[in-house]
Image 1 (cartoon, rainbow, N blue to C red):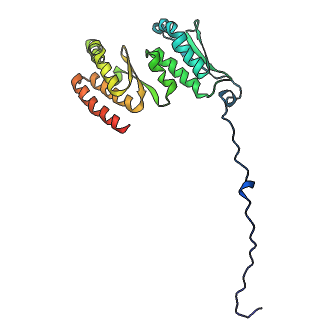
Image 2: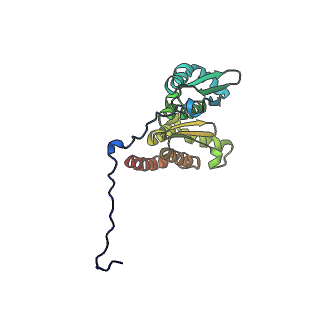
Length: 222
């Protein structure tokens, strides 16, 4: 045993680090196509055509429905006259599987009564949605009371509906007692609140005043 009072030191062998050039590069893979993600299986969606939308669909079919879906989204689409459904399916050229649902939502929006140009925002923007509700969800009304409520929602010549659309950057379809709103989530929320106020009996002037305040806040937050 050594007693020289000195501490023995441990020899450490320094191993030179591997040069950066020797580190393998991270492999890069191109994104899988919709066809590859589904392992070659074709994905389908079917959208029913209400009787009152069949004629408008035939008129708008080629330019407003078929081309945006087939040419731009690479989704195969056809009109099944016997079943009265619009049928959509992926192809080997479909770049993203989500395109199929977007196209189904686009067609559904048209069936609800939205103009093709407005409905097309569902194809172009991921943050655009449709919110639907009925007057009875807000208040139970019958007879003349129900008719007056529907009248207040539209206003004379559609003035009230247009005002709400312009203030909130939404599109609104009033189909009898059903109401459909197309837009971004925060904007839909404001538009729906305004429509509910009208259903509950608030004067249009009061609703406009509140809309101006809320829409100004929305503009500031953007």
